[in-house]
Amino acid sequence: MSLRSICIAIALFTALALASGAYAADENLKQLSGNGITVMYPAGMETQAKKVMSIAQESIKPSIEIQRNIVALLSDVDSMSSDIAQMLGADEKQEIVKARLQSFKDKALALSTAFAKIKLIKKSDAAAANGVDAGIVQIRYVKDKDEFTLMLDDSDCSADKIKRSFFPVLINGDGSIRSEAKVAQMALDFLGVGEGIAIGPVHDTIGYVIAEPLKIYHPLARWFNEGVSGWMTRQIVSKYSSKLSSVANNALSLNATSKNLRDKVNLLAWPQSAFENRSQAFFDPALAAANSQYAIELMSNLLGKTGPQVLPKIMDQIKYVGNPDTDTICAAIKKVTGADFKATLMTYVPQDIREGMASGESNKLVSKAEAFVGQKKWQDAVDALRRSLQIAPDDVNARLNLAWIEREVKERQDSEIQVFLTAALLKQQKYSFHMFAPSIEGNYVMGRLAILMGDLGSAKKFLEPVIEYAPDHQDAKKALEEIRKLEGAAKE
Image (cartoon, rainbow, N blue to C red):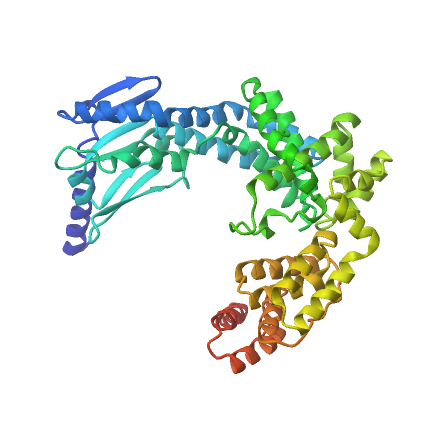
């Protein structure tokens, strides 16, 4: 090793030592402990330690308890993963289930351990070392701004790393607690808030296995994914944690708000979360919760009355076939149970939408929208198409034209989501569609669709005229740059 390399290594070691010197040897620190939380601090900082302890007990401790509840719920990942795999009729996926549950358990253990052990560190020491290494908690110092950034490094949740993890709280040179008003929120940003978090790992794992390894994730069959995941989560949590059983029931059962929204629930037109526009103008959290809770009610009414072997049989009919749509799923349920489940599902569609289906209203609305485009009544066209998609959500012609017209009214984010959803539908089966009229934005939308479908040649044919007629079209420029990168990657 060269002399220069040795000097650099020594300098780095010294800098890290400065950051850890005040707390590396715990025997040199004093401490306060109570209710499962410990605050460690250098001599002379007892006042600050008491204040931090007060903040922790009042604001942070409930969320630490939630993480501990997760650890307890997942105490036997072998048995739980076996139960989940069996309920889905997919024993071959048990190791995937187990690995995912274990990762949630490890993270919860790391979080509950780290944030229950708080250490006070001099700001000057942390700045000198450009940050603090606190195991899964990392602080980086930006010298030119004199700011600290708190990050979570849970890529490694080994026992050794968890053991040395803690929540660092910085003390300014004048003895004040740095960002005192934000100390609790910084911890809660990682720990989370609310009892429902405790059942999240089970719900997430079940939903993941259904959608990914078992390939059941049609863009317009969310009612099935959410309904099965919610029903199974209640069964699993009830078996493994009597303490959290009521939490699961409260979180996944109908509440008063959802009941009041019953006449607005349309499970047939409810897109999967990846295709959901969560901007404020489009997303209603209360209606989203109602959709989820009614989907769970729908599947609970079926699965709770038919015995434990029905779900595996249904899953056997649809898994691996490639994102089965609503009709395919309902046909599988009918084959297994003999029940006309599509008729039951239709009761979770508003009355006026059912009437629109019976009368062919969606086609009339699409024709109206096309006429509105001829008159350049863009918003009227948008309104007609959105209504038509509540009645016939798989109409890619209506959806693609909506994507184009939304760009005319500056709804670009929703336009991109509509193109994304259209591409997903086109990958399921063949549909016919046409743009209502030639336009620059229509060409852009077709170009984006072609990219998502993997047809880069057609994408360029749609996008190049956009640049020709609108040289400053930034989205088209980005799309063409995306094509160049994809073509370059294909050549490597």
